[in-house]
Image (cartoon, rainbow, N blue to C red):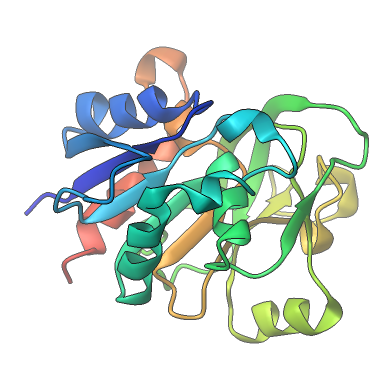
Length: 231
């Protein structure tokens, strides 16, 4: 049984079509766009909050999109155990919505960064990672505010509950600040909630799915979801 992905579209989203193309055209799963003013998730099994600049990133990234009508449905869906993945701006929206702990700050360099990075897969006991057959993924980033911040108690809780899923690393799985592109605490690139049904990550797996681009590591995340969501 193949899952249906619902891709939410906010004003300013610019990776919605990338996500739709990756899961539907490349991987062959069912997918449908969900306009932010709607409340119907259209029987989606997985919700994708895509990257971009929702509402122009005014105030704080994700802070206005969090109040779009569809987010009430997404929050209810997640709280009932539904699977949600927020990518880049989508991760920022999940933080603003309280579905994940912590906050995003400007990159330490104060510059927008667009490059390929290596990710250490720290927790394979989630739907999003269970089928990943490697310890390292190579996936692009493109953000100006990806510097993950949380207080010490929250960071300890994330570590104790194994909620840190991806960390910036070297190609040979060395996790060190010099491989951290944005200053994110603990080199965090992606986390899940305690229930492990909501994933937020700054790198863009949907941009690493097409063999034409010679980048396919992002497929591993979407395939893992598809292979494990109904188990």
